[in-house]
Image 1 (spheres, rainbow, N blue to C red):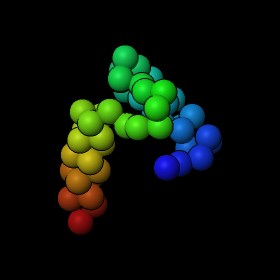
Image 2 (spheres, rainbow, N blue to C red):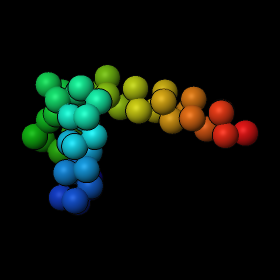
Image 3 (tube, one colour):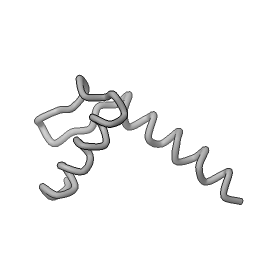
Length: 49
C-alpha cells in the first residue's frame, strides 16, 4: 500500500517512461513495470560501486 502522493508520483513516472497504458486504478503495480524498475535499479546500483 502507498499513499495518494506516492501513487501520483508512480503514475507520473509511468507516463514519462511510456508505461501509460499500464497504469492501474486498483492500487497495484503492473508486473512488467515492476520488473523493469527492479532491473534498472539493480543496474544503477552496480554502476555506483
